Amino acid sequence: VQTWLGDGIAAHEIGVFVPTPQFVTRTHAAIDGLAGVDGITTAPMNLAKGLEFRAVVVMACDEGILPLDARVADAADEAELDDI
Image 1: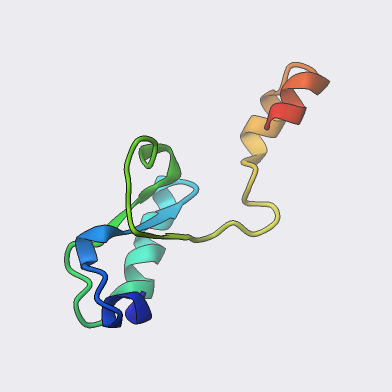
Image 2: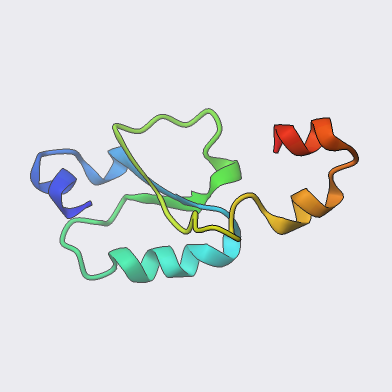
């Protein structure tokens, strides 16, 4: 993020997305203290649909986080599981 800001990408052109709302606090902690971050969009991934940014960070995509365990458990059949 700091490199993008240094390269002239404006803060409002940067999006940082995480799997769930609970991770948004972690996102803020990760970028707080960087110069020029006011205006960066930080949000859960489901809110990113339809938005456009010049630069995007996707955080907290570790194994066991994505896909969401609840979605895997709720899959009705193998085809739905493949879609996840």
